[in-house]
Length: 624
Image 1 (cartoon, rainbow, N blue to C red):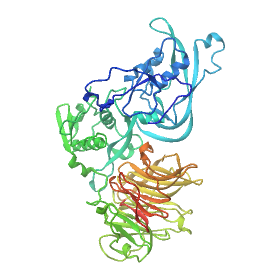
Image 2 (image 1 turned 120 degrees about the vertical axis):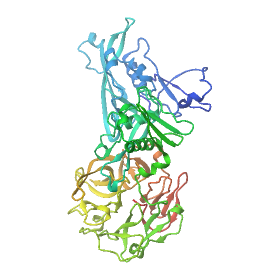
Image 3 (image 1 turned 180 degrees about the vertical axis):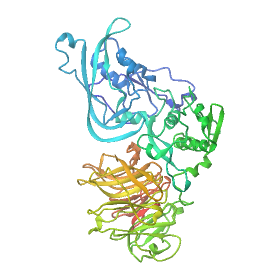
Image 4 (image 1 turned 120 degrees about the horizontal axis):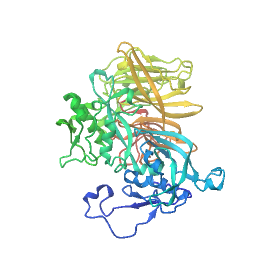
């Protein structure tokens, strides 16, 4: 964790750790808690182990206003149960009304305190009874009451805290904060120490072919026990799952839990038994679910907790008001996966120096000998410049070398190349068609960058007439590249405007009928706003992207970005020179691939360094 030191502030939190083989999170397994040695007041944000637990310290008697403000800010970074100690810095009225769960403001560094303001009061007598301090900083993100994270371009933050002298229970006058905004204000390193990203899962609406596919909805929960609810991390996560999807994703997903379903009263922990079976006690609202709906409810829980616990959850059992409702084994979960692809490991595909599409067999993890794909794209009757392969690996779409025409061809049978399905009229190759991308529904997407008529196009099932997709949030920006998520409800766009190319995530909404569908990309959100020049993207797993870009004035970097735009210290990848494109698989265990200048096509396997795979080749992709 990083360091957020508060200028002028006095550390009022106490940091306690249980090491020697057992962390704070698993104290139940320890023989005893250390009871000797000094307890020292330290800055709440000094670097240390993520298992270190920080306890708030109550205000001391006779503390001046500046110390009350600093103590309040420090206590917000603690693991203070119910924020009881934190509230001691507030007046009696503010103590009752302050809502710490009202959202979190994330600053680049801990807030800077300044004051008191010179205009406080018209005379000395007034100033002696009330005063105001200002908190300032650089706001980089906001987390709303639904635990949904949204990164922001750095903006100035300013907030005032008003203090008054208030008589305590012992009759003594003490300074307390009586005007305070709801929610928490945390520096970035404190936020990353206290919270962790998790994905909760809901079902995509309007799913094609009757398939029910789960969609990841990223949120942030407390890394340990939540101070307000006293729930452990797993229970917090299930609680937010039951509360329903976040507002951004809600228009395109559904929950199978009946309205009003919640955890049974008093449940604050969801431990697994020695068989890795997780039982989830629900209230009687869950009894309304049909057997098939209940099974889908269990799938939502199973996927949601899949990456959260150290031990794999082998089975989820849902209990209602009248006993067990249903259960789902982990081995049955793949039927709900977003990627209904090929049965084996995904292969890598690229275009050779003759414009032909070649394949590196998936079972070789990128080290196999390339071979031409079957069909006209492999024989090279028309040189191609970019390629996109359907997730079932039965078909591929390719754009001609000068970006003018889009073709779709089988990868299973020989035959002649059919007429192009899309053609661009732009005069320059750079203004023509983008690389194509397939979603998990089997639909094909491509952008025509013609300045005279830019279009985002979708071809249902990869065939027929292209349908133009509305993108109301473009605001004059041009689509350079696009990548569809496996679930088909999110699209990643590289948008260029005023000489800058940024990464944006949009929500794909489907209306109308199958005969006359209406498709649009809504509510575009900039992801990783600190990257001002993004050159390549690829989805990696259910809710993560690999992004190649630069910060303003910085060097090129390759890093992971979550679908909500958040990043983490572990998101950075080993450096590699002059990356032109990047390819990641839905299976995060498969190697990350990149096309570079000078080193050709390289791969990065988990826990390894970059290795050269091919000296020549362009437009390398995984299916999708």
